[in-house]
Length: 118
Image (tube, rainbow, N blue to C red; front, side, top):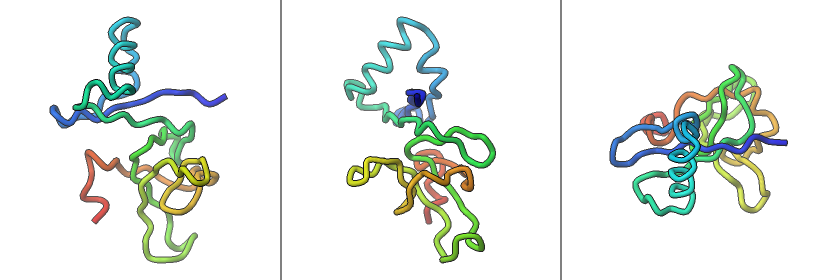
């Protein structure tokens, strides 16, 4: 069974709140996470853990920017954002599915490193 956890981007403080921070305390952590998921706190943007890790063992979250080897896969565009694909009901990286994430590398996320998408 996949581990369910979240991290959140704090728009006001311009910092990422880790899953460990959100789960830090029984009472405060649960209330904070509930507020984030129910969108009561509009300054926090939740990102769900995909249950997958990249080739270096780093956890992959929604909103992560991943890179893959162009020589291995061809094409010019080797940087993609991980997102939920409603049509296929799976995590996606710009058209591909997450079945082969162990061949990808997380290089940042859309909030802390938006320049990587240019």
